[in-house]
Each structure stands twice: as structure tokens, then as C-alpha cells.
Image (cartoon, rainbow, N blue to C red; front, side, top):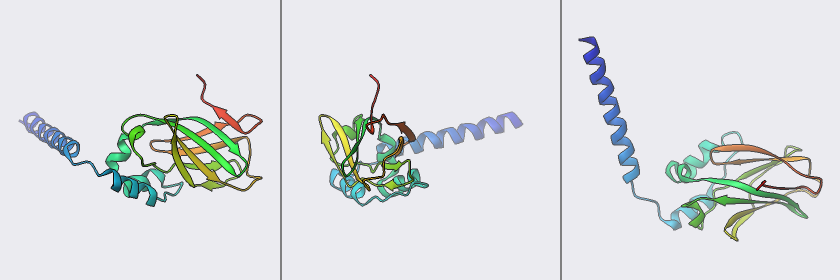
Length: 158
């Protein structure tokens, strides 16, 4: 009798979870204009990054974000980081903020971003002496340290 009750409870929980997932998937997408507005207004903090972007942009759009850095380089006025994105984000005009922390502890939010040759390129302003041997990137689902070469650059191995 106990097993039957437990089985019925587990079945009920499974049905509720399935219904929640179906409802989530069937929920209307936000408009491209609203997504752009949310991404531009998003100001995540390093320590609460994942929660901040889900709360400020939306859990569903963030869950759909898939990307990997392909290059990082020091510029005269800061940093430039390029990401290869998967659909649907590769087709959006909006850019999820990707945070950068240099090896001296400076935490930077992108000053701008653009699509260039199929990549989302982020630009960061920093002090001219804010170099170092590595940078850390905080982007959806991941925090990653990238070791730079002597010229202050890194390219994803092919």
C-alpha cells in the first residue's frame, strides 16, 4: 500500500514538472526590441552574475544563450573579446553583458559590442597599465580564466 502511494506521488510530481516545462516552452518570446532594451539596461555584478542576468534579462533568453570566446586581445585603450554564438543569439541584435576581470583585479563591463564576421565583439575600457598575464571572463553559464601571450592576446586553438 505504501509503495502504491509513493508511486502515485512520484507520478503526480512528474506530471506537474512536465506541465511546467511545456508551459515554459510555450510562453511567448519577448520582442527583439524588449530583449535589446533589457540587455542594454543589464548591469550585473561579478559575484551575482548568473542571478543578475537571469533577473534583468530573463531566465528563458539566458538559458538559450550558447557561446565561446574565440579571441581576447589588449588594445591601446582596453580589451576586445570576440565570441562565437549559436542560434538564436547569433541572430539577435542584443548582447548579453560579458564581464571581464584583469589580473590586477579590475572588473569591467563592456563599453560596447557589435557583430563582426559572424562574431559578437565586446570592447572594454581600462587603464593603460591594466595588463597582466591573464583575464577572467564571466558569461552565461561559465566563468573562465584565459592566459594571454606576451603581446596580451589569446586565440582559441583550432
